Amino acid sequence: MNQLKQLRPAVVVVGASRGIGRSIAKVAARERGAVVLVARSTEGLAAAAMDVRSAGGEAFTLALDLLAEDASSSLQEFLSANDLVCDVLVNSAGYGLRGAATTLPLGDQLGMIDVNIRALSEMTLRFLPGMVARRSGGVLNLSSIAGFTAGPNMALYYASKGFVRSFSEALHQELRHTGVTVTCVAPGPVSTEFLETSGAGQARLFKVLPKVDAEYVAEHAWRGFKSGRRLVVPGISAKLTAFAATFLPAVVRLPLIGRLQRRSSDLCACGSGKKFRECCGAR
Ligand SMILES: NC(=O)c1ccc[n+]([C@@H]2O[C@H](COP(=O)([O-])OP(=O)(O)OC[C@H]3O[C@@H](n4cnc5c(N)ncnc54)[C@H](OP(=O)(O)O)[C@@H]3O)[C@@H](O)[C@H]2O)c1
Image (cartoon, rainbow, N blue to C red):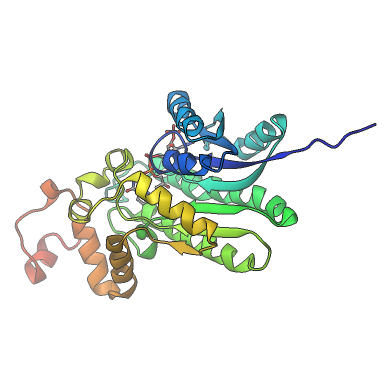
């Protein structure tokens, strides 16, 4: 007689080899269930798996490049092969690039669309229908305070995070009363490798804004997700920045961000106002 396999619910963390994703995996592991860790770095995944086990969870690792076209189907096959079903999906994989859009390499900029937007959307849309059918679980997507405004000198990154916020908030609304939650997390600067690899850490904006650590973001993100929140902005400084980004008029906000997002060493001594516009305003 054919027996239906009992599938076990898993928390799947995409972008779990370091940073915020690794910290969220550790927090999720306290619930003592299965946690599937996904990223490219096998070393990072092995370290994250140790965190998960020491927090009481059962760790599974899958080395996967989200730039591969079959990434989401490979993840689905991995889950099926281990008798797991994606109950909670955390999309934390992402990268950024600081610099003028006309000077940054085209391929690296388009890669941000592939990882930050396409892969996140594909993972979300692949696993959400099953959650809705089971009336359980949900999706936690990493946006940023960058998702509240356009960001000169980091244009595509800000746009990608704006997409994540818009997409996640719309899904949150669509899924009301289904038993499934979509939560968007929008942190300010977080002390992870991201600040160095993106070049954001060299910009005055990221030097001025206070940084929080990944564990702090993870605790807030998980608690917000568990209580069904639409949007989580961890910390008072990030909340104030998001507020300013929403309400400052574009004519003030865009030159300010553009200027603050240049490297300190890129800035000349032209000052502000008319002198600044003549000297650096077009950059
Ligand atoms: N740090 C901040 O200041 C900050 C602030 C706001 C929002 N965020 C957002 O939070 C998320 C996590 O950032 P983080 O600070 O934790 O960054 P991070 O430390 O650089 O970690 C990024 C994660 O994404 C994975 N990843 C990147 N490209 C991938 C690819 N092609 N395939 C598979 N995995 C990939 C990395 O794993 P591998 O390299 O091993 O593949 C790593 O696990 C990002 O979406 C970021 O935009 C960060």
